[in-house]
Length: 302
Image (cartoon, rainbow, N blue to C red; front, side):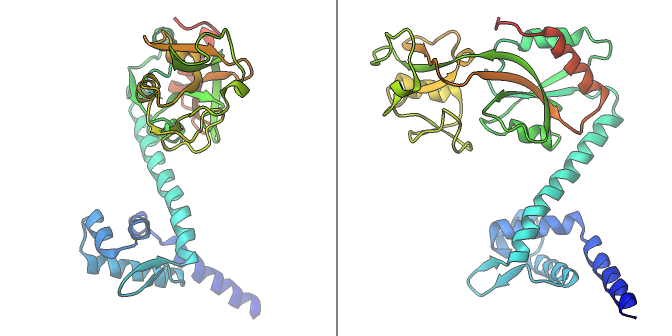
């Protein structure tokens, strides 16, 4: 008897949770991020009463409150926080599945390659030329990312392959092929105290102002307390105006801009440019591009 009751309770629980729709997840996430039903409704382009009713239905179905409401504020409950975290992952997974299904169904859809501006170590033209020789080569669309989101492009299906740097970019959930390893240099104004040195060690940079990369807390060897920068162009301007210095892969400042000097940092970890792709992506079009990259081998930047 007790076993039958447990089975019925399990069935009812499965019915409640299995019926949560992606639309409802978007509603919950919008309210959780805005913490305001009016703003969330505007963001979703629906009426506020309809949104409130939908949230109440979700809470009833799950059997737990997601929000604490008062006349002045909306707060997440622990259940709401959990659904926000896992709901985001679920929506990203659904979006990635849809994009990959459409790409797989279109035999001539372009291959999408993501990189940061200037972040190819001079290898991009050779890589594209090598891929063009593959019998099933497609057009390659180049996507430019911010300083820290190339991995996200690959995980959520916005890009098929990407050029990433280790140890800086997060490779969790990605396969990768090393393309080029290089040393790192301190980039300083021409009149800086170390500008005439043949090389330096990281200890020699103690007390210097280093950049904070937007969206990249604690970059190994590159996270600092100086002004926030979004890209290398902005960074080089800051260095030229004596606001900071930076330690970068050599190829990002080759050739070195006028008024700046690049000094090798002998004990800084080497930087490796890698071709990366989602570890679950086994499509022939991706395998073909990876094969072309492997054929290039290790080479110096052009």
